Structure formats: C-alpha cells, structure tokens
Amino acid sequence: MAEVKWTVKADRLFDKYVLNAFLEYGQKTSKKWMTERIAFANRVATHPESYTLEPLLADRKRKYRSCQILGRFKIVYYYAKSSEIVHIVDIWDMLMNPENLQQRIK
Image (cartoon, rainbow, N blue to C red; front, top):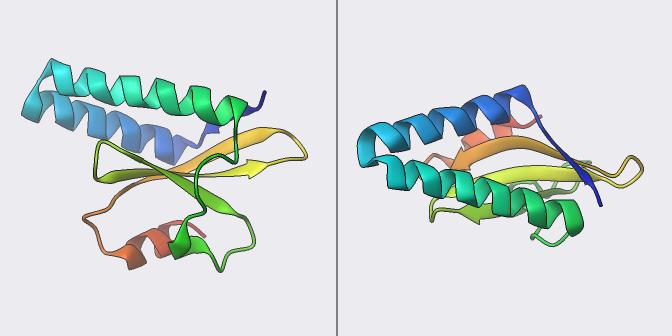
C-alpha cells in the first residue's frame, strides 16, 4: 500500500475549494468534497497507477496522472515507485486555460 502525501500547495487549494463550496453551496457540497478526497486517497493508496496519465503533462519526465472529481476539477499526482509514495501536486479547475496547468507544475 502506497503512502499518500499532499504538497502544501495542493492541500491549501483543496481547503480553499472546500471553503468556497461551503460558502456558495452549503454544507452538503463541502461534505461531498471531503468524501471525494477520502475515496481518491483510498484508491491511489491501494492502486497508485489506476488513474489515467494526464495528457497535458505527457512531455514531462515524471508520469503525472489525474483524477477528475466533482465534474470540473482534477487532482494531479505522480507515483514514486521506489519509495511507494503518491505525491499530490495540484488541484486544477478545468475551466481554467490548460496552459495554466502546464505552467503551475514544473
């Protein structure tokens, strides 16, 4: 079973999105965010390569993968097999310009 580690940036973005969801849509939507996070973490811990490779980051040295949640967001991560750690690096709002994702992950 792999260990799941969130970068500070990804964790803060997640918290920001949960807070915005709570303020705009209420407690039910913010709970949905938390449920999605737990389900994602459980799946990548047991099957780290189960999500598809992120096509916008295909030219990178690392094999970035992404999981779409709540319709318009992607959790972007990579799996370090040698250490068995899943590194969550970003949460991307797919309404944003795709070039933003490429610039944010270096």
